[in-house]
Length: 89
Image (cartoon, rainbow, N blue to C red; front, side, top):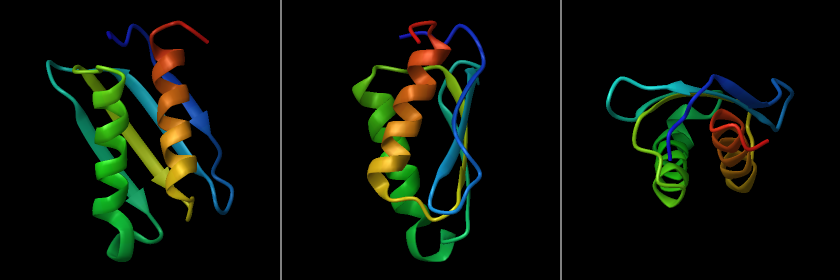
């Protein structure tokens, strides 16, 4: 699945996550900023990678700003951003 345009999902509110996605440079690049990075940073990165793999995204730049969101929220925000980025939503 190709990302054809920049897209976002989520908010910067507490207990939410803000996700930006745009076409990449030949591979997936993921950056994560989180208020709980020390405890859950790698788990957040893994969740983002899993969603990208499930949706067969192989060429995207993804930025996640987490404000303490549950994993299911992060996954939903990434999925929404991907669908918007490929022009489906």
